[in-house]
Length: 171
Image 1 (spheres, rainbow, N blue to C red):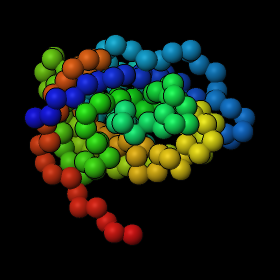
Image 2: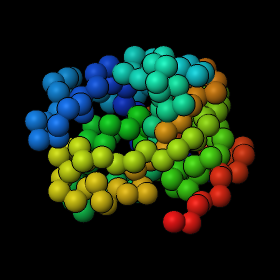
Image 3: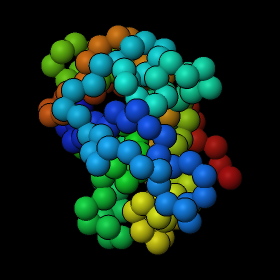
Image 4: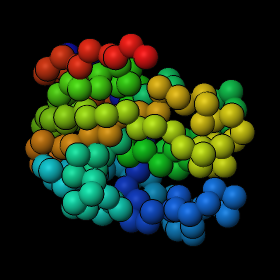
């Protein structure tokens, strides 16, 4: 078990980064960060833009490590800029691609299959700042499938690696 902190949760009903980055993000709520998120197995976060979307079943939740945020580019960068769902402190989630983990925020454990890296796109250079896409390469978080119903809360949590990550390929 690893003591971690859920720093932020983002549940966004709108897909704000569509089209060309030069046109800027689509309008939406000023702040989609929440203190509590309901998780549904195989579906994602209730109320999120990827919830129950067939095309995103293996990637309905994206988890990122706060330690990988490019604060040198934008000191105030957070989930509103990266559009990830769960921001954790205390674990390198990018090193866990291929693993199954359990995250317990005090409401019971919720298992996630950490399926693949969340590759940063050109939007990062717009929402975070110039150079962010490159800075987030291999550190942009992990696209996941929730395996249990449950609740995530901002605050202290425990993370357990239930199955080992896939071996990293050498490019």
